[in-house]
Length: 397
Image (tube, rainbow, N blue to C red):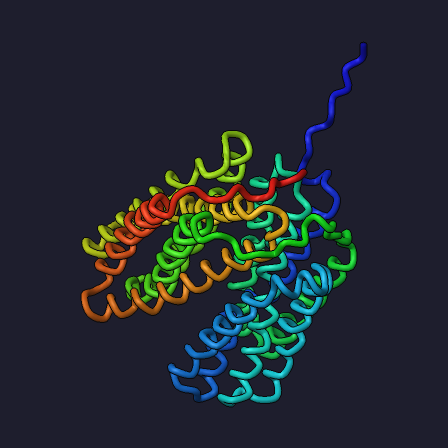
């Protein structure tokens, strides 16, 4: 009797996954090109530091506000329409910066672009969960994270380089066009149908969301403080700060895929505690570096350790939330994760900035390390006190 061996699912053999990665890289690349350019243009045009800072703040506030509504939009319009509209809101409005860099127009355009970004972040993550078979969900989310982060690593310095070499005009044009090109990839995505048995769209119970949500929020808060304050802490070695953040970003890519591999092979949730430990250790190393004016080698080790753990926390928390929510709530799960990440990064940058002004930069990293060690543990205690959760609907491959 012949034995039929089913082929193992693969990332690039799964319909729609490669296209989704191309779409994500293009959309986030366009966002990254303008992320540092717009506040800098506002500042160079005579705007105050407060106005320059508020550009990103308004963008992220609109992002989080939109993310709350995206699960409902996904059910009504479908993934392709939400992604396409998100790209069109993120990209083309950037051309309006060519007309004016005054406060009200800049903030209004930033809010519109933030809404588009909110659609992209939630719908993009949910799309991967819909397309990937359960056996490769961890690696699929990791690969998507690598595609997006790699685009950001290219886009962030490219926008500033274009502006310094020529002017802000080509940067605005490129930032407007790249997300539009992502729409071409979106048209190639398969349609995702929602069968009748997936009609329940209730809220995800707090007990299954809390621990991974707190983990990604507190890790993102540490990242927000690091990315905002490390260049200031190393102001006498500003070029070194850029290198350290780039090293951290590279390590994040490795951490995301490593966590996805562990999740698929060993089990969902197993990589979260080790990843948090790496984040905490990285912050401890940054604490010593800030307190002792340490060598470049220690800073590089800190960046590698933190980045690897941060990537692991991102991927594992996302897979945990998807697994706990089940297919009928992928949109809500993606929204919850993205809100945790974006809100955590913003709150971390703000609150750790206050710590820096009061106690100094070494205390910034020490407080971040303590938060990473304590906050998720408190979440575990709360979850146990709430009791067992209702079993979610099962993921299907």
